[in-house]
Image 1 (cartoon, rainbow, N blue to C red):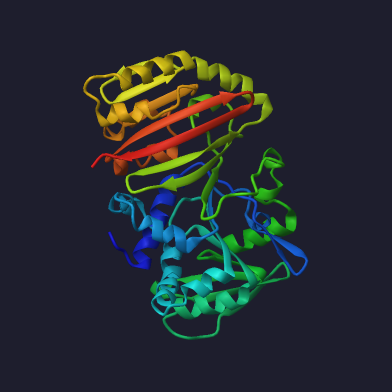
Image 2 (tube, helix red, strand yellow):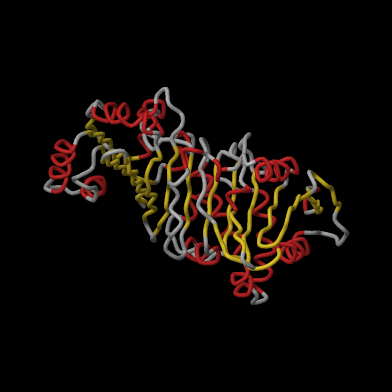
Length: 379
């Protein structure tokens, strides 16, 4: 399935909206040396955002997503207006052969999502080896229908430039040495400036201090979120964040990582994990406890008629503390029943995911709760 850059970007954003939808997905350490100083994009991200994605190689992710067999399914999950507008510029330079040069100067790209969760309530952040002003000028030229000077406004001593774009909309921009911030909402750019000046950014959240993972393999796509991978564990506690490293091949999408849990909540969450009731029925398996997990995996492996559902069960770890395998077609028929087992960002979009079997495993060791979500395409 060969897609042009704009269409590919739509697929990227669709997957990210599918992953982010509710609850909030956090951040990654983004430090870069330039002229003896560090640019830390986290210091610009408001701590009240409800979602964030980050990648170090935007072009690579676009290419990978164009190859997946389920692209036309996730493409129906939604689009983000600002990224669609920005993508016109990427599409143009790609056709002109300039994408390589852009990738050399643009080191990181992040998107934060803000309430209310609407396509225009996003902020796009670029980290680059140079002044963000140059990329801003190129993007403006690629997005504008007519060439005119931007309107400039001052907020707390910083300049916000407002550019007209298509459909009668405007993009607010804030740039400096090593970074560029864009949003359809000027108020969100003002929040970015507030976060930096008042130290109310994601970089300043106590729970996350010292728990970031600064080193990632090349070509990564990472999400963090203010949510639990298993909501029933955090009843009465809403301080949990989750990390999701996204990997994909032609038929499967993986989301792996861990929960960042306050020490005071760990014991109670571990108790709840051990009390999850056993469920085994057509197209649904929910199991807690290593012995029970091991038994169910063995049963699936040696079942005479080995279905795709059995294969999904067989591929999970026998050392997991909890597993759930569910055909999302069945979950979509009664989503309320699975409210405690799936993050709301998944549950709210389950009708768009009917073509997948979801496998989840959660492993608890000490104060660490690690998880894997596997979406297996059925067709």
